[in-house]
Amino acid sequence: MSDLIEDIKYKLARLNILEKLIVINVGLFLFSLVFRRIVPTVFSYFELPPDLFDALMQPWSIISYAFLHYGFWHLLFNMIWLYYCSRMILNLFKPKTAVNIYFIGAIAGGLLFLLCYNVFPSFFSQSYGPLVGASAAVRALFIFLCAYNPHSEIRLLNFNIKLWYIGAALVVFDVIGVFGLNSGGNLAHLGGALLGYVYAKQLAKGNDIGKGFERFTAVLAGWFKTGKKGNLKTVHKKKSKVGGYTQGEFSGLNKQKQIDAILDKISKSGYDSLTAAEKEFLFKVGK
Image 1: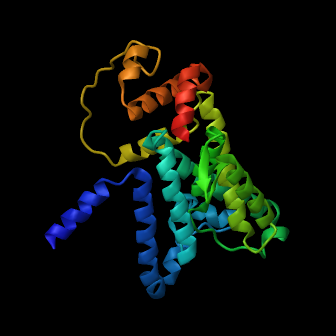
Image 2: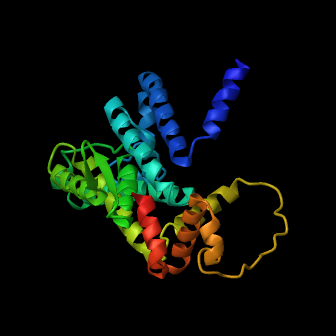
Image 3: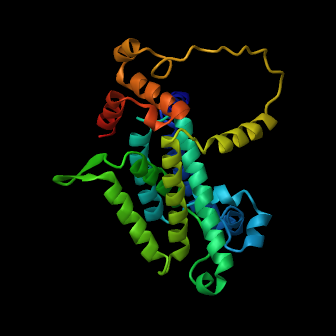
Protein backbone atom coordinates (compact mmCIF):
# COMPACT_ATOMS: atom_id res chain seq x y z
CA MET A 1 0.00 0.00 0.00
CA SER A 2 2.82 2.39 0.85
CA ASP A 3 4.42 1.70 -2.56
CA LEU A 4 1.15 2.63 -4.28
CA ILE A 5 0.92 5.89 -2.33
CA GLU A 6 4.51 6.76 -3.18
CA ASP A 7 3.86 5.98 -6.84
CA ILE A 8 0.82 8.27 -6.86
CA LYS A 9 2.81 11.05 -5.17
CA TYR A 10 5.58 10.67 -7.74
CA LYS A 11 3.17 10.88 -10.68
CA LEU A 12 1.35 13.87 -9.21
CA ALA A 13 4.66 15.66 -8.68
CA ARG A 14 5.47 15.26 -12.39
CA LEU A 15 2.22 16.90 -13.53
CA ASN A 16 2.29 20.50 -14.73
CA ILE A 17 0.20 23.09 -12.91
CA LEU A 18 -2.80 22.88 -15.26
CA GLU A 19 -2.79 19.09 -15.13
CA LYS A 20 -2.90 19.37 -11.34
CA LEU A 21 -5.98 21.57 -11.72
CA ILE A 22 -7.51 18.78 -13.81
CA VAL A 23 -6.83 16.32 -10.97
CA ILE A 24 -8.49 18.71 -8.49
CA ASN A 25 -11.57 19.11 -10.70
CA VAL A 26 -11.91 15.36 -11.23
CA GLY A 27 -11.36 14.66 -7.53
CA LEU A 28 -14.04 17.15 -6.50
CA PHE A 29 -16.44 15.68 -9.06
CA LEU A 30 -15.98 12.19 -7.59
CA PHE A 31 -16.32 13.61 -4.09
CA SER A 32 -19.58 15.35 -5.03
CA LEU A 33 -21.02 12.16 -6.52
CA VAL A 34 -20.97 10.62 -3.05
CA PHE A 35 -21.64 13.52 -0.71
CA ARG A 36 -24.33 15.29 -2.73
CA ARG A 37 -26.58 12.37 -1.87
CA ILE A 38 -25.76 12.70 1.84
CA VAL A 39 -25.55 16.48 2.33
CA PRO A 40 -26.82 18.07 -0.91
CA THR A 41 -27.23 21.57 0.54
CA VAL A 42 -23.53 21.89 1.41
CA PHE A 43 -22.50 22.31 -2.23
CA SER A 44 -24.82 25.28 -2.69
CA TYR A 45 -22.33 27.32 -0.66
CA PHE A 46 -19.71 26.78 -3.37
CA GLU A 47 -21.94 27.50 -6.37
CA LEU A 48 -22.14 31.09 -7.62
CA PRO A 49 -25.72 32.28 -7.02
CA PRO A 50 -27.16 34.67 -9.63
CA ASP A 51 -28.50 37.11 -7.05
CA LEU A 52 -25.90 39.75 -6.13
CA PHE A 53 -26.80 39.86 -2.43
CA ASP A 54 -26.52 36.08 -2.14
CA ALA A 55 -23.18 36.16 -3.93
CA LEU A 56 -21.85 38.80 -1.54
CA MET A 57 -22.75 36.54 1.38
CA GLN A 58 -20.43 33.86 -0.02
CA PRO A 59 -17.65 35.79 -1.82
CA TRP A 60 -15.44 32.70 -2.20
CA SER A 61 -17.97 31.30 -4.67
CA ILE A 62 -16.67 33.65 -7.39
CA ILE A 63 -13.79 31.15 -7.65
CA SER A 64 -15.08 27.95 -6.04
CA TYR A 65 -17.88 27.57 -8.63
CA ALA A 66 -15.21 26.93 -11.27
CA PHE A 67 -14.21 23.68 -9.54
CA LEU A 68 -17.68 22.17 -9.34
CA HIS A 69 -19.14 19.89 -12.00
CA TYR A 70 -22.30 17.89 -11.52
CA GLY A 71 -22.48 16.31 -14.98
CA PHE A 72 -19.96 13.84 -16.40
CA TRP A 73 -20.00 15.27 -19.93
CA HIS A 74 -19.67 18.82 -18.60
CA LEU A 75 -16.55 17.76 -16.69
CA LEU A 76 -15.13 15.69 -19.55
CA PHE A 77 -15.32 18.41 -22.20
CA ASN A 78 -13.90 21.06 -19.87
CA MET A 79 -10.99 18.84 -18.85
CA ILE A 80 -10.20 17.87 -22.46
CA TRP A 81 -10.05 21.56 -23.37
CA LEU A 82 -7.95 22.31 -20.30
CA TYR A 83 -5.49 19.51 -21.10
CA TYR A 84 -5.19 20.72 -24.69
CA CYS A 85 -4.56 24.29 -23.54
CA SER A 86 -1.95 23.12 -21.03
CA ARG A 87 0.05 21.48 -23.83
CA MET A 88 0.20 24.74 -25.76
CA ILE A 89 0.36 27.51 -23.19
CA LEU A 90 3.05 25.98 -20.97
CA ASN A 91 5.36 25.59 -23.97
CA LEU A 92 5.30 29.36 -24.35
CA PHE A 93 4.59 30.85 -20.92
CA LYS A 94 5.50 30.40 -17.31
CA PRO A 95 3.11 28.41 -15.07
CA LYS A 96 2.22 31.56 -13.09
CA THR A 97 0.85 33.18 -16.23
CA ALA A 98 -1.35 30.16 -17.00
CA VAL A 99 -2.66 30.08 -13.42
CA ASN A 100 -3.40 33.82 -13.48
CA ILE A 101 -5.41 33.46 -16.69
CA TYR A 102 -7.32 30.47 -15.32
CA PHE A 103 -8.39 32.10 -12.08
CA ILE A 104 -8.99 35.62 -13.42
CA GLY A 105 -10.93 34.07 -16.31
CA ALA A 106 -13.17 32.29 -13.79
CA ILE A 107 -13.69 35.57 -11.92
CA ALA A 108 -14.45 37.49 -15.13
CA GLY A 109 -16.99 34.86 -16.19
CA GLY A 110 -18.66 34.98 -12.78
CA LEU A 111 -18.81 38.78 -12.78
CA LEU A 112 -20.44 38.96 -16.23
CA PHE A 113 -22.92 36.31 -15.09
CA LEU A 114 -23.82 38.40 -12.02
CA LEU A 115 -23.92 41.67 -13.96
CA CYS A 116 -26.35 40.47 -16.60
CA TYR A 117 -28.65 38.71 -14.14
CA ASN A 118 -28.94 41.74 -11.86
CA VAL A 119 -29.10 44.41 -14.59
CA PHE A 120 -31.56 42.47 -16.78
CA PRO A 121 -33.43 40.26 -14.30
CA SER A 122 -36.63 40.06 -16.35
CA PHE A 123 -34.72 38.62 -19.31
CA PHE A 124 -32.47 36.14 -17.48
CA SER A 125 -34.27 35.23 -14.26
CA GLN A 126 -36.08 32.24 -15.80
CA SER A 127 -33.19 30.90 -17.86
CA TYR A 128 -30.56 29.86 -15.32
CA GLY A 129 -29.79 29.02 -11.70
CA PRO A 130 -26.46 29.00 -9.83
CA LEU A 131 -23.30 28.87 -11.91
CA VAL A 132 -20.92 25.89 -11.78
CA GLY A 133 -18.10 24.60 -13.99
CA ALA A 134 -14.66 25.55 -15.24
CA SER A 135 -15.87 26.62 -18.69
CA ALA A 136 -15.14 30.34 -18.22
CA ALA A 137 -11.60 29.65 -16.96
CA VAL A 138 -10.88 27.22 -19.79
CA ARG A 139 -12.35 29.59 -22.37
CA ALA A 140 -10.05 32.34 -21.05
CA LEU A 141 -6.99 30.14 -21.61
CA PHE A 142 -8.01 29.14 -25.13
CA ILE A 143 -8.96 32.64 -26.31
CA PHE A 144 -5.71 33.93 -24.79
CA LEU A 145 -3.81 31.52 -27.05
CA CYS A 146 -5.91 32.54 -30.05
CA ALA A 147 -5.33 36.25 -29.46
CA TYR A 148 -1.65 36.05 -28.58
CA ASN A 149 -0.63 33.88 -31.52
CA PRO A 150 -3.53 34.12 -34.00
CA HIS A 151 -1.61 32.69 -36.95
CA SER A 152 -0.77 29.47 -35.14
CA GLU A 153 -2.33 26.45 -36.85
CA ILE A 154 -3.54 23.08 -35.61
CA ARG A 155 -4.23 19.87 -37.51
CA LEU A 156 -7.94 19.12 -37.84
CA LEU A 157 -8.75 15.88 -39.69
CA ASN A 158 -6.89 16.25 -43.02
CA PHE A 159 -6.21 19.97 -43.07
CA ASN A 160 -4.69 22.76 -41.00
CA ILE A 161 -6.81 25.51 -39.48
CA LYS A 162 -5.75 28.73 -37.81
CA LEU A 163 -6.33 28.76 -34.08
CA TRP A 164 -8.22 32.03 -34.11
CA TYR A 165 -10.84 30.61 -36.49
CA ILE A 166 -11.80 28.09 -33.81
CA GLY A 167 -11.78 30.79 -31.13
CA ALA A 168 -14.01 33.07 -33.21
CA ALA A 169 -16.47 30.22 -33.87
CA LEU A 170 -16.69 29.44 -30.14
CA VAL A 171 -17.44 33.08 -29.31
CA VAL A 172 -20.18 33.20 -31.98
CA PHE A 173 -21.78 30.06 -30.55
CA ASP A 174 -21.61 31.53 -27.04
CA VAL A 175 -23.32 34.74 -28.17
CA ILE A 176 -26.10 32.69 -29.77
CA GLY A 177 -26.30 30.53 -26.63
CA VAL A 178 -27.02 33.58 -24.46
CA PHE A 179 -30.55 33.48 -25.89
CA GLY A 180 -30.97 29.77 -25.22
CA LEU A 181 -31.59 27.56 -22.18
CA ASN A 182 -28.05 27.85 -20.81
CA SER A 183 -27.73 31.61 -21.03
CA GLY A 184 -25.89 31.85 -17.70
CA GLY A 185 -23.21 29.40 -18.77
CA ASN A 186 -22.73 31.14 -22.11
CA LEU A 187 -22.44 34.53 -20.43
CA ALA A 188 -19.70 33.10 -18.23
CA HIS A 189 -17.95 31.77 -21.36
CA LEU A 190 -18.03 35.25 -22.89
CA GLY A 191 -16.65 36.80 -19.71
CA GLY A 192 -13.76 34.35 -19.73
CA ALA A 193 -13.18 34.88 -23.46
CA LEU A 194 -13.06 38.66 -23.02
CA LEU A 195 -10.54 38.33 -20.21
CA GLY A 196 -8.36 35.99 -22.29
CA TYR A 197 -8.38 38.38 -25.24
CA VAL A 198 -7.55 41.47 -23.17
CA TYR A 199 -4.85 39.61 -21.24
CA ALA A 200 -3.14 38.51 -24.48
CA LYS A 201 -3.25 41.94 -26.10
CA GLN A 202 -1.90 43.65 -22.99
CA LEU A 203 0.85 41.07 -22.52
CA ALA A 204 1.96 41.62 -26.11
CA LYS A 205 2.48 45.27 -25.12
CA GLY A 206 4.51 44.28 -22.07
CA ASN A 207 1.68 44.74 -19.54
CA ASP A 208 0.91 41.65 -17.47
CA ILE A 209 -2.54 42.38 -16.03
CA GLY A 210 -2.29 39.27 -13.88
CA LYS A 211 0.42 40.76 -11.66
CA GLY A 212 -2.16 42.41 -9.39
CA PHE A 213 -3.93 39.10 -8.84
CA GLU A 214 -0.57 37.43 -8.26
CA ARG A 215 0.33 39.96 -5.56
CA PHE A 216 -3.10 39.53 -3.95
CA THR A 217 -2.71 35.76 -3.73
CA ALA A 218 0.82 36.22 -2.38
CA VAL A 219 -0.57 38.41 0.42
CA LEU A 220 -3.21 35.78 1.22
CA ALA A 221 -0.57 33.07 1.28
CA GLY A 222 1.57 35.22 3.56
CA TRP A 223 -1.20 35.27 6.18
CA PHE A 224 -0.78 31.53 6.63
CA LYS A 225 3.02 31.52 6.81
CA THR A 226 4.90 31.50 10.09
CA GLY A 227 8.47 32.25 11.02
CA LYS A 228 10.83 35.06 10.20
CA LYS A 229 11.96 35.87 6.73
CA GLY A 230 15.62 35.53 5.95
CA ASN A 231 17.71 38.49 4.95
CA LEU A 232 17.53 38.54 1.19
CA LYS A 233 19.82 40.54 -1.01
CA THR A 234 18.64 42.03 -4.25
CA VAL A 235 20.95 41.24 -7.12
CA HIS A 236 20.77 43.53 -10.13
CA LYS A 237 21.64 41.78 -13.32
CA LYS A 238 23.05 43.63 -16.23
CA LYS A 239 20.49 43.74 -19.01
CA SER A 240 21.28 42.13 -22.33
CA LYS A 241 19.52 41.74 -25.62
CA VAL A 242 17.36 38.66 -24.96
CA GLY A 243 16.25 37.95 -21.40
CA GLY A 244 19.70 38.60 -19.92
CA TYR A 245 21.64 36.73 -22.64
CA THR A 246 23.77 38.04 -25.47
CA GLN A 247 22.74 36.94 -28.93
CA GLY A 248 25.65 34.47 -29.01
CA GLU A 249 24.67 32.92 -25.67
CA PHE A 250 21.03 32.87 -26.71
CA SER A 251 21.79 30.80 -29.81
CA GLY A 252 23.50 28.18 -27.67
CA LEU A 253 20.53 27.61 -25.36
CA ASN A 254 18.06 24.75 -25.79
CA LYS A 255 14.61 25.49 -27.20
CA GLN A 256 12.78 25.81 -23.86
CA LYS A 257 15.36 28.24 -22.47
CA GLN A 258 15.17 30.26 -25.69
CA ILE A 259 11.40 30.48 -25.25
CA ASP A 260 11.75 31.57 -21.61
CA ALA A 261 14.32 34.21 -22.60
CA ILE A 262 12.04 35.64 -25.30
CA LEU A 263 9.03 35.69 -22.97
CA ASP A 264 11.12 37.43 -20.32
CA LYS A 265 12.01 40.08 -22.87
CA ILE A 266 8.33 40.48 -23.86
CA SER A 267 7.26 40.89 -20.21
CA LYS A 268 9.84 43.66 -19.73
CA SER A 269 9.73 45.52 -23.04
CA GLY A 270 6.72 44.26 -24.98
CA TYR A 271 6.29 42.14 -28.08
CA ASP A 272 7.42 44.94 -30.41
CA SER A 273 10.89 44.89 -28.84
CA LEU A 274 11.60 41.47 -30.38
CA THR A 275 13.84 41.20 -33.40
CA ALA A 276 12.54 39.66 -36.61
CA ALA A 277 14.50 36.47 -35.88
CA GLU A 278 12.99 36.21 -32.39
CA LYS A 279 9.46 36.73 -33.71
CA GLU A 280 10.04 34.09 -36.39
CA PHE A 281 11.39 31.65 -33.79
CA LEU A 282 8.36 32.20 -31.52
CA PHE A 283 5.98 31.77 -34.44
CA LYS A 284 7.58 28.46 -35.46
CA VAL A 285 7.40 27.16 -31.89
CA GLY A 286 3.72 28.18 -31.71
CA LYS A 287 2.99 25.97 -34.70
